[in-house]
Every structure is written in structure tokens, then in C-alpha cells.
Image 1 (cartoon, rainbow, N blue to C red):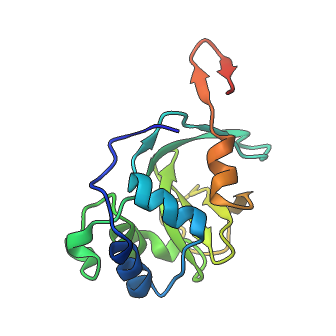
Image 2 (image 1 turned 45 degrees about the horizontal axis):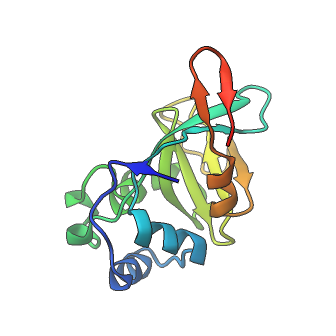
Length: 159
């Protein structure tokens, strides 16, 4: 899959530094994604949620690794993993890491098992970590495979 607006290429040491800082081990699938793409906007952005109230959603972007500010999230780029985790980590369960955003302000996150989840932020001030969190896939690659393009004439293009 193609990604627009990806950030500079990473090396294994960059990903290792981020994991050490976050005290979180990424799944091999997600590590490979970071090494290949380092975040960005996927060419195919739509995905099914399986939820009645929101049957499909849009990935706005996947966060990147800001290699110059991994350990200083206040100084990191706003779309970076370390900044997002620092600023919005209170919205998700403790054993998870924010990997992107959908619907403008709903975090996408990974848990330690490598599953991809989303949190529907119905109230911007709501900080209860476990509420309104929904599993989207059992793995990062499964989530990427579920993405599709949306033809604005209300027709889905799946491929």
C-alpha cells in the first residue's frame, strides 16, 4: 500500500529507542511498517468498524517517529508517536500506544498483543481510558488489509 506524507526513513535503532522510551514492544508487523513508511496517510483510508453507530471510519494519518525528539515529547512534532502518546495517552488504556488518528480526533492504538483499536471520543474532555474503545483487528497487517478507497459517489472500491 502507498502512503503519502511519510516522514524520513528510520533505522532499527530509532524504533528500538522509541520502544525503550515508551516501555512498549511493538509487534513485528508494526515495526516493519515504521521501517518501511514511518507514518503518513494511507492511499486507502476507509475501514469498516463493525459498530452500528459508526459502521465505517477514515484514517487521517499514522503517526511517525520524530527521531530528534523521542525522549522529549513536548518538543516533538505534533503527528509523532511520542507527542501523541504524551498528549493523548490518557484517553486510551495504559498498556497501549497511539499509532494514528481517524475521524480527526479519534485515536488508533495498538495493545501489547498487536491488536489495533480505536477510541470514539464523543466528548473531547472524556478521559476514561477503557470507555468507547473498540477492537478493529487482531493485527496491524489485518487492519491495513481492511482499508479501502471511497468513491464519493457512494460506491466503495475494494481491492
